[in-house]
Amino acid sequence: MAIWESLMLTALGGVIGLAGIWLGARVQAREADRVRREQFEREDRFRLHKERIAAYSEFYAATGRMRRLLKGHQDLSLCREHRSVLWLAYTTVLLIGDRSVLGAATAILGWADSIIANEKTYDEKEYTDMIHRFQNVGRADLTGATDLP
Image 1 (cartoon, helix red, strand yellow):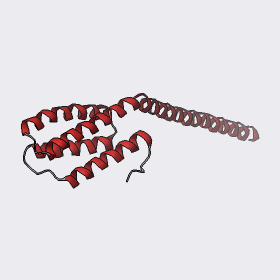
Image 2: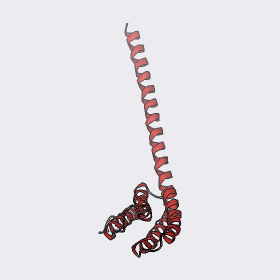
Image 3: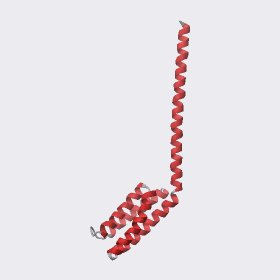
C-alpha cells in the first residue's frame, strides 16, 4: 500500500509541477506582450511627435486667421475660401492627433461652419473658450503639462 501512496503522491507532484510551469509560461508571455505593446505605443508617439507639433500649430494658426475674418465681418466667400485652409489643417489633426485635441479642433471647425452658414454670430468669449481648450489639450498631449490658465 505504501508504494501506491508514494506513486500517487509523486504523480500528483508531477501534475502540480507541470501546471506551475504552464501557468508561469502563460504569465510570462502575457507580460512580454504587454511590454512589447507599450514599447510600440511609446515609439509611435515619439515618431509622430514632430508631426503633431506641426499639425497643432498649423490648425492653431488657421483658426486665428479664420477668427480675424469672422470677427471683421469679411465677405462670406472669403471666409468660405479660408474654411478650406482650416479643413486642410483639421485633416492632419484628424489623422495623427490625440482624441482630446481632435475633439477641441472639431468644436472649432463646427463653430466656424455655423458662423459661415449664418446659424450664429461671432462671439469672442465662445472663441476664447474653444481656443483655450485647444491650447490646453494640445499642450497636455505634447508635453503632459496642464499648467495653462
